[in-house]
Image (cartoon, rainbow, N blue to C red; front, top):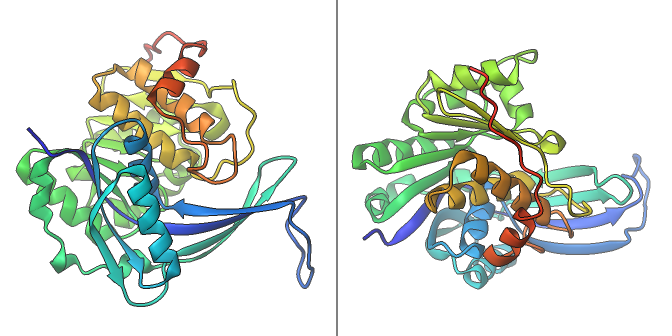
Length: 311
């Protein structure tokens, strides 16, 4: 029996988030209404989401040998994410400063990044992938994603990729080794072309290798394509949105948890949209992450849609 439901590979960040009326202009000082902090990063937040939903999750990532790295490791421990694959590297952790406009929940972000690119690829035991049912990747270190995806394919382990922030050039060698590909709509338009339809984008990705493509569309919900049928679900509107930081990362974790639990695409999209919305109730991507019982309670209120049979 596999040790992990999911073994994730990708970046970790420490977020400092402030609620403001508006971002400052050049040379202007403004006051924040509140401040909070916590961990972020695509693969890392997807991992904490899966762990919060009751799955067994391991994480391979890099954090700095600094106080921010200490805080991130402690948070992984609180969520129950197995962290023996975390490397402590020289230099600063990846840090994000996020300003959230109180009226609109729009964000401005400054990132000091690159920690994941200091990870020692040769020190990673990629054979641990045989202990997992699923491997989830982000693309912030494309070579890490490629090596993990190739090894997973050799071992017959299903792969999932969060394609946000990846260029078309970085994505191309990785995509043939991916089973489940989930970009956001903005990344999709950068990787393909700005005027492409959602349906044509799904088809374009599908022919490159993934058997399942899902595109997240912010306030427009999400769309999935399995090679035969398109499935759509709207956003869950049962909560007031305070901050959308980490919403897409949490969608990934919830969607993968649903699929690992055997849910069909219609229900998995509904479940993931609901979970992501619940994570937007407070400031920070993990602060209001619900457990399985609370998520299912809200899923029961979801209006739901019949599957879209467009071909």
